Image 1 (cartoon, rainbow, N blue to C red):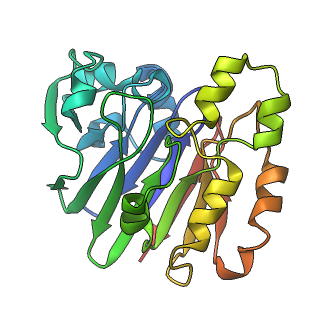
Image 2 (image 1 turned 90 degrees about the horizontal axis):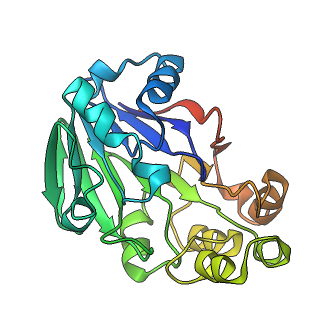
Image 3 (image 1 turned 45 degrees about the vertical axis):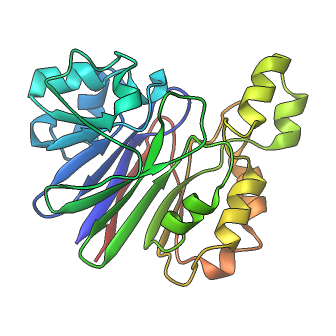
Length: 253
C-alpha cells in the first residue's frame, strides 16, 4: 500500500510525504525545520522517521528547509546535479545526485525523475511506484511536453499544479516581467493547461486528483472548480492542497 499527504502547497512553502509500510520520504521542504516538524506532527509523523528528502529544484518555496532538516536528523537528500550546483543544499547531511531521467529506488519505492520546463538549473518532478501503484507529483512547470504526458499519463494518483488563471494574472498587480515569467513556457501551469493534460491521460485509472500549487493572488478554488467541470465525471476523487493545511493522508491500496 502507498499513501501520500501534504504539509502545505503554494508559493509560501511546499512539502509532500509519500509512504509505504517500510519507507517514508518527503518531496521538497519549503518550510523551516521547526515549522516542518510541526506540520509533520499534524500528520502523525516525526522527522526521525524520514528515509529521504527528494528535491525538485532550488527555488526557496521548495528547498529553504531541506539542509537544516537533513543535517539535524541525518536524512539523505536526493537531487539533480544541476540543483546540487546551486549550493543551497551544501550543508545537508548527505547529498545523492542524479540526472534527470534516472530511475532509482528509495527503500521499496521506485522513483523516476522526470525533467520539466521551469526556470531553474535542472528541475525535475517525480513519478513514484510501489507494487502496481503509481503516484505522480507534478508542479512547477510552464508547459506540458510529450515527455511529461508519457510519464504522468497513467497514474493512480496525481498531484497536479493549477497555478494561475490567465485573465486574473494579467489583470493583477504583478509587474509585467513577473507576469511574463509566470505565464511563460518555463513558468507555471495555468488552469487551461492543467485541464488539457487531464484530458489527455487515462482518467479511468486515476483514483485521486490533488489540485496543488494554487496561486493565492492569481487563482481561486472557485475558478479551478469551474475549469474541472468538464472532466469531473471521470474523476473518482478531487482534493485541494491548502497552503496552511496541505491535505491529510490519501491511500492507494
